[in-house]
Image 1 (cartoon, protein in one colour):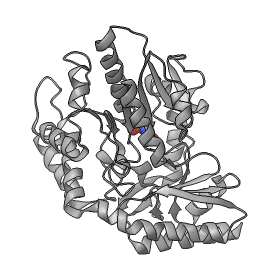
Image 2 (cartoon, helix red, strand yellow):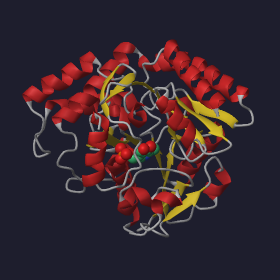
Image 3 (cartoon, rainbow, N blue to C red):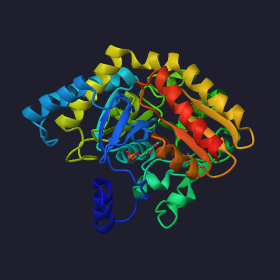
Image 4 (cartoon, protein in one colour):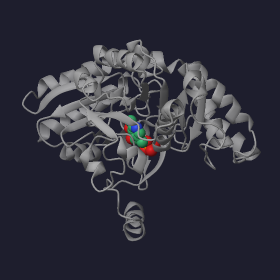
Length: 399
Ligand SMILES: Cc1ncc(COP(=O)(O)O)c(C=O)c1O
C-alpha cells in the first residue's frame, strides 16, 4: 500500500461519506502545481475550486500568516483586532461597499446576505413573510438558508425549508424575473457568473435590467461573487464589467486564498435599515488569522496587479480552448466563460476526460455532467496554458 492508499483508506473508514473524491491525496503545492503523497505532480487548473488565486506557496502570503500566528490567531468578536479593522477597510475600498461582515465560508456569507435583505424589508413594513427571487441552476451553498436560494434540485431535494418564499426565475431571462415580483418580494439574489450551474456569464442587458427592476420596485440586488469575484473574470469584481453595483455583495474562496474566510458587504443605505447589534454573529468570523489573510491577499492583488494579468492573458486561454473546441466539433458543443472562469461543454459526460487528464498530470473539474470547468490560479502564464492544452488534446484524441 503506498502513502496515498493509506490515507484514502483512513478517510473511507472514518469520515462521513459525503464526497465523491478523486483518488488523489494532495500533499503540497508550489506555484500552479501540486504534488501528491507519492510524489506525482499535477498542473492545477482547478485551484481548490477557485480558491488559490495567488498560486501555492506564495512566500509573502505565507510570511504574513506566520507573523500573525505568532501574534494572535483568535480574539472572539467581544474585542477589536487590528487585522479585522484593516481587512474591513481594504475590502470596502476594493468593492465599493460601505460595510462588511466577515464569515468563515461562502455559505455563511450567503446566510448573512439573505438575513440582511429580510431584515431590511422587515424594518420597512414589519412584515415577516417577504419573498426572494433566485435563479434556476444557481448555487449558493449547502446550509438550509443557502440551499433555499439554490436553484438546483439535486442539492435541494429533501431540504427546502423556505418552500414558497423563494421563487426561481430563469437566468438571463428578464421577463421571467419580472413575472415573479409581487408586493412581498424584497430581493433578487444571483451569481454574476453562474459557476456550479455550468459557467454562464450574465448577459449585459439582463443584469442591467435586473438592476433597473430592483430600483423601480424597491428590491435589493444581492450579487454572489463567491466564485466569480476577486479577479477571476478579469475585473476585481465581475459586476464592474457590467456597470452595475449590488446592494449586497458576497465573497469568499479567493478572499482567503486557502484560509477559510468569507464576507458579505452592503451599502450604507442597506446597513441603516438592516442588521443591528445582536442581530448576527460568529465566534470565528473575522478572526485575526483569517483577516491577516484577507489583508495580504488584497495587498498582493494590488501590488502584482493580478487583475490586469488575468485580463491580458484571457485571450490566450480562450484561444487555446477555442482551438480544442474546434478540433473536436462532434464532442464539444461550445466554449464559454469570462476571464479565468471557463467551460467546455461536451456532448456527453466529462467524468472520463477528467480522470484521464489526472492520469496525465492535469487537474480540471466539472460543472454539471457534460461541462468541463477550468478555474486556474490567477498567476498562470502562457506556458501553463500550453501545457493544459496539450494534455487536454491528448486525452480527448485518445478516446
Ligand atoms: C457562487 C457560490 N456561492 C456560494 C458558495 C458556497 O461557498 P462555500 O463552499 O465556501 O461555503 C459557492 C461554492 O462553491 C459558490 O460557488
